[in-house]
Image (cartoon, rainbow, N blue to C red; front, side, top):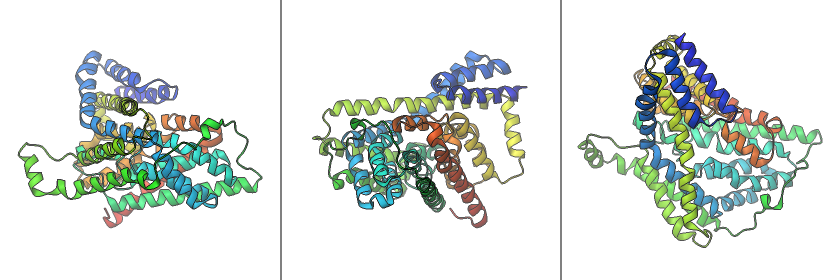
Length: 451
């Protein structure tokens, strides 16, 4: 009965999130409901002594990376630097390679540290103009943007500064370059198969007589005439993030003297530190160099800071819910059931991660819950922490884009398209192909030991 209560609250989380109820409200209510119905401990105890400490600890660990990433993305978008880079790639690849150019331009921005939501707004006007010039149905544009932003640059490519890639670094003691060979394999699969799928769909539609289509698009939405930094200047902050993060991660923080210094303080090096420092330096560079494009610097920094609050509090709330579920006696039965499944442990990791991400409609929420619920158990299996890091993220990037996913809803709203028009292709490139890549990586690792 108590297991049914846990499953019921999970279903409730998915259902009400799909109906638009905020996870900030849902998670604590459902956590208290689970405690109340199982009678393991008082529901107010669940809120104050289990939920809140777990949520607060998550914010304590990850707030700097969220706020640095949000400000960086805001400045890249507000200054026009993101638009300059994406426009340059699309212009040089041309309409003949319209799909590939939109995917690569989106991927560059995401892999460069620009947040997913900023990328969506930056890419829409340029992508729409490119698809219109190439005669490609607009309904395929969301799939191209999500392929570049929500897949290989978010979960697979080693070194991506997206905050999702930093989440396992603290509990697993890894870096954002974890399992580089496996990440590159998965990333290549996602990119190649995703582009081939969208091209196939476009060719099929064009052969049937379909073109870009008639869409109500105001001049404001597609205006790309405002001044922007040069391509070289726009690229500098991204290069700074890459280089500084690489040097700090692979040289400075691996120095025996630095490691010893932190060991004397009875702590270890935090995998998020290199990313935070790299983003902070890049932010300072933009504030100085992009002054003529940032008409209200204080406002942009403020908006970026505030913009980081909802994502981190949403994820922290989901982690708090996970902590309450973990504390229930019935969770022991669930863990035993997972352990009893007669498949390799890595497949259990992937199935758990993608299932929770799908229920919540968020890869970060799913990852946060996996780390909170089963992170230590998975580590105790003896699986290489780097492989765990990468597989959890790859799997979380699978079912996270079910129809109730907030990022998908936002993207379709920006593109002025509906689930009926575009969701099928989004599902293929952001769920079917990433899950295929995740399980391929597991098979390759188990067969060869490749990391």
